[in-house]
Length: 430
Image 1 (spheres, one colour):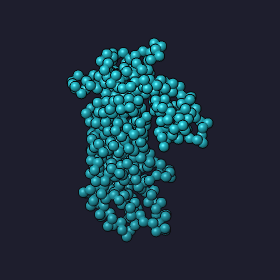
Image 2 (cartoon, helix red, strand yellow):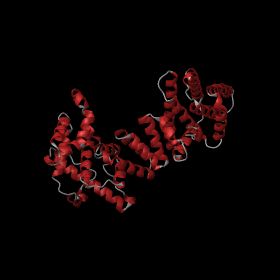
Image 3 (cartoon, one colour):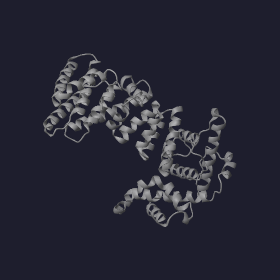
Image 4 (cartoon, helix red, strand yellow):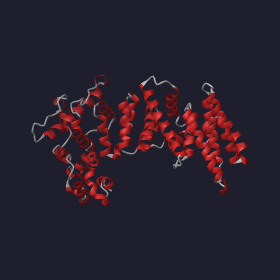
């Protein structure tokens, strides 16, 4: 299926055409792609049905006219070499004004690509004198124009999708918007762009670069971007993976369960541990502390939802807390401790009432027992007071409930689990 047909199926379902006018905002990000497909090629290159689909999408889109102007203007340029030859003559501080000029689109294409070429060359020749690009000159009112130009140039292979290009875009005031526009109009480039942004992040990290990756994830496939961040295996990328988890995917228990086994994700857990145990004295630590705060809030809300009989995978939530305490050195708060113990107690009573069906409780007993012991260890690592003493009493009561769920196996299970807690905390969790 063509890109136009795929996006049309996504944006304008056939059974809901009455709401097409409400989708103008949804169509806007794809104007560079749609107008290029519709106007930049000969009719024979695009199937008739796809052309009709594009026209239906764009007929009430105000910015389609601008996209068409740039698509037509690009057809007048035979080669990027003609622009490169006069690249040095463009004033990088003056974005070409319209002034009623019929050829303004062509002049802005030449200026954009010419100044971009000069800036990229300055980075190759002398890294100490790197030239910036569009530093406030082409402001947010020109974003769509720049998106159209970059999209056409990349699709024509006039400029390479390279580390210098991505670094240059990241340094500009509208770089995040431009990069998101590139992946929206060419989804096949998303993985490459994420890799290049991660490469730039290794050299110089800031909040803008972090949020660029989050924005790209939001515009494309969050799971894929999160996976790339995990594979990159350095602290700043791990922080992005955590942020995508709680900001976009909201699958914190499942995610933590997936990364807590073994030592494969040691970098991520070092970030988690630092955020949970160290004072936020650096910008990065403040940022990760805020992310972990949102993650803990999501887990607390899951526990509260379970207590109100809403469907929640309680096993996944308990195992997530085991990971945070066992590998992340989480100091459990009184609120978290109370919620965890209440959830375990409620689940014990529910399972005891349903025990007539011959259901095995071994896995729940092991996870719940591990959670209780880890919570106690976390609590006792802090100054012992009346609250800590009450925690141990509640823990003994819950362990008794767990034992009665499976009296024939719980004794040996508790012993093995307790031994494993002294060596490999997470290996005892099935």
